[in-house]
Picture 1 (cartoon, rainbow, N blue to C red):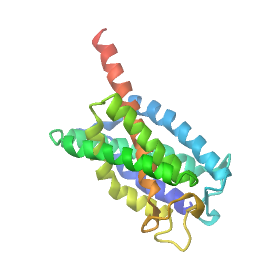
Picture 2: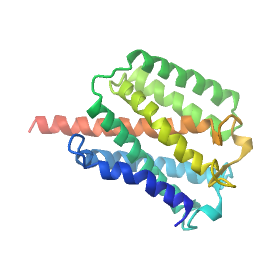
Picture 3: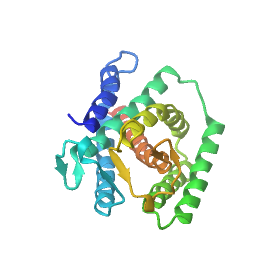
Picture 4: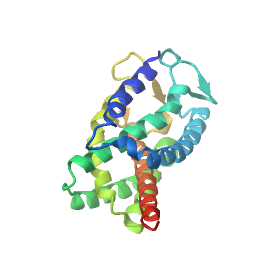
Length: 233
């Protein structure tokens, strides 16, 4: 198997096995989770396909299976199912084991940061497609969900996002060449701002935020809708 595939398998193994932990019973949430993942994954796969065709990023053949869906390696498509699963798993586990932790003030600062920095970066680097798209989308999502819809789960999302940064840095470090001669996923320097965390483009923080946030939103909406329907039966 390819390096990219092994990275996904190892990243998925822990959360999947722990999904059957009695306190969390994450497997019981699958019926709410899978529709949310599928919907968001389709959007990101379309985005990914377009950026790959345009040469904004690409993949080193030595580190992939070279089985393609469109212009995307199979591993890249699986990424949009495995990583969201892991992120929501972290979110649910933290809710189960640390229900009293609140980040109300930190969440407000967090939201302001993503809105202000997202809009500044997306306009300042307007010609850099990855910077503009990832940062702009982060700002718009935050405005819509936090400032307009005022969703109650946002501070729990922030807690999970911060905790998920460690596995994020490990996985993205592997994919961007932190431990290999060449990166698994390469980025066109003309479409990123050039700031990196090790080998990880700074924009990846916004990209993962864009991926994680709407999945949590859809997951919570589907779960709450199911609860309301069952309560009226």
